Every structure is written in structure tokens, then in C-alpha cells.
Amino acid sequence: MAHGKKSDEKVVFVGDSRVRKGMGFVTPPDYTAYPGKSEAFIPNFLLKEWMVGVVVLVGFLVLTISEPAPLGYPADPGASVIPMPDWYFLFLYQYLKYPYASGDYVVLGTLGVSGVAFGALLLAPFLDTGKERRFYKRPIASTLMLLSIASVFYLTNVAWTHYKHELAKSGQEPEHITREKEAHEKHNAGLPTSMAPTTEEVAIVDPDGVGADIYKKATCVSCHAADLKGQAGPSLRGIGDAHSKEELLGIIHDGIGNMGPQYDQNIAQGLTEKDIDTLADWLASQKSAE
Image 1: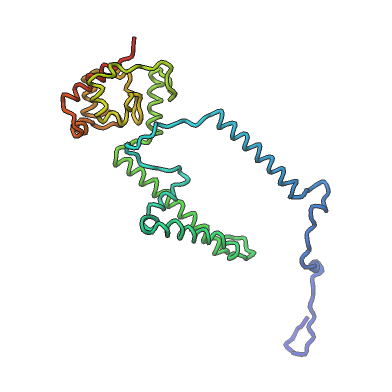
Image 2 (image 1 turned 60 degrees about the vertical axis):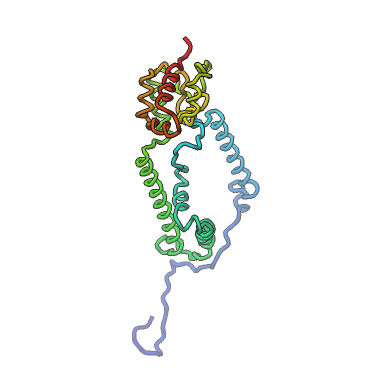
């Protein structure tokens, strides 16, 4: 230990006996050093993980078989529908709608930008090689993570907001909400809520009459199908039990529920007012057999 500033003074270092001398890097023992307490990753541990995965998969398959997925309404190419993916694809859906990801720039949007993102994720382990674990001292990994999370949240929010705006603008109602309302109405009326067809089918009254020919030319057929069983809209078989001719004319003129007025469209398709009156009369005659 030195007390002065003389250059030739002997310096004595005082050590701490409580600090043990380091032995450098010591190779940790492998699983063989702990008999009965550990096992080899391959094949023992991997086989157990595989068996657990099989059990979970079988359980999942049993659930899907016992509770089949509900079917939506039959597809209608002529219906006005706003396409919408599942919520976990909303950010990709919104991204692909931007000009630089479609049209003349579709290659840049699908390969260029996604390639840069995938390349950054692929190179992250090689760029961030430090031993520091705190995220604020890992600028490369933290920046990539924050940018990815912010982009996903932003694009998802924009896609959902735009979808709600389009629904309000067009006056449409999502199918799952329509189905839920119909199920509630059927439940309150004491009717079965299942989408399965009934065992007793209501027959078409006067299928070869003048009204049937007019129906095939009218706009009704696009939603209610040529056999009146319904497609994008409800079935019209037995509609005469629920609505009179005057009420049906009012529906054609003013619309009902999600269906808008159909009078002007039918006139534009070449039908006359007399044809529409005949059509309403024919629909009112569609009653179930007593």
C-alpha cells in the first residue's frame, strides 16, 4: 500500500480473502451427471412432447366433430357485400389495400416490403449479438419489435374503422348480427332457431301461372331464389300466411328490414305496374296447406 507520491515507493495490493479466485469458464455437466433426474432431449423429451401434441390434437378434432361449425347464408354473387377477413388478418388486409401494395406496385407490395420485413426478422439474431437482456439496451431488437407491434395495431385499427364506416354508409348489417336477430325472433315466436330445413316442405302454389313467370323476371329471384326457398334472403314459400297482397305491395315499394325498395328496379327491368300487382297477388297466394 503506497502512502506518498514517490515513484520508487513499493506498492502493496491488499486483497480480500472473501473473493474466490475465478476458474474461468466451467463447462456445465450434462444430463448424465444427474441420473434419474434428467433425460436426453432426443428422443426421450421430444417423444413426450409429441405425445402431448397428439392428445391435444385428438381432443380438438373431437370438439370440431361434436359441434359442427354453423353455416352462413348461401353465397350470392349479386349481393352487395363488404369483404372482411378474420380479425387476425385485418392488418394484412389493410396493408394490401394501399396503392404501393397493389396495382402497378403489386410486386413491390407482396415481395419487396414483405421481403424486407422477413429479412429483418431473419437477420435480427445476427445483428443483435450482445449479452445484454434489458430491452432498452438492445436498440436493434427493441426497435424491430416496437415497429412491428405498432404497425399491426395501426393497420388493424384502420381496417376495422374503415369497415364500420362502409357499413354505416351503405346501410348494411353484418351477417352474424342478422342471423342473431333472426334467431332471437324465432325464439320469441316459439319457432326452432336451427338453419336446417324442416321435414315438411311448403309447396309452391300455381307454379306455372302468370305470376310465376313475372317472379322469374323480377329482382326477387336474386335473393329469394327461383324455387322461393331463399338464397341471400328468406324463403317466400308460405309468405301468404304472413302478409296480404297490400302488405306485399308495400314491401315492394318501401322495402323491409335489410331489403330496400324494389319497385323502381323492377320497372327498370321492364316490368309494368300491372305486372307488379300480379306478382304481389301471386305471392299472397303462396300459403301452406292446411
